[in-house]
Length: 137
Image 1: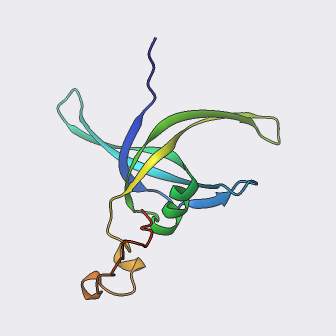
Image 2 (image 1 turned 90 degrees about the vertical axis):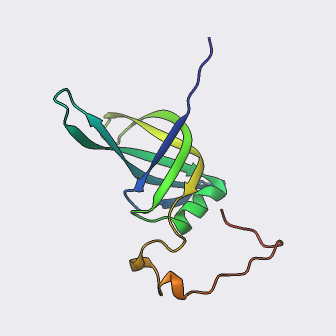
Image 3 (image 1 turned 135 degrees about the vertical axis):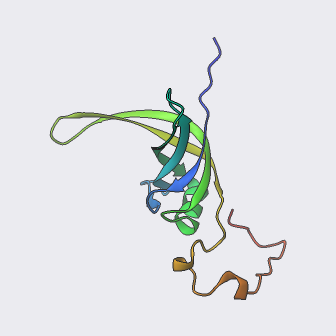
C-alpha cells in the first residue's frame, strides 16, 4: 500500500527560532508557527481559529531561520509529520507530533518589521550581490 507524509503550512512564527548544535556539530532550530483557520459553522457564522505547530529545521536552513526569522515573521513550511516519545526525569511518558521542515520560505521583507530595522527600507540602498557570493536563502 502507498503512503504519503507531507505537510504544507503558511503562518507566523510564535517565537524566535532556537538554534542549537548536535554533538557532531549539525545545526538544528526549533520554533512555533500559528496558522489561521476560518470556517463556517452550522448556523452560517464565520469562525476564526488558530492552530499551533512546532517546527524542527536542520543544517544550513536551521542557521538561516535563526538569523533571518523572528517572532511574528510570516513563513511557508513544507515538510513531514514526525512523532516522538520520551520519558521525563520524573518517569512520566511524553509524546509530541512536530513538523520536520524540508523547506522554509521566508515570506516577509528582509529585516522584518519596523521594530527590527535600523532605518526605513525605502531609505536603504539595494545591496549588490556578485555571482560569486553565496546567497543565504
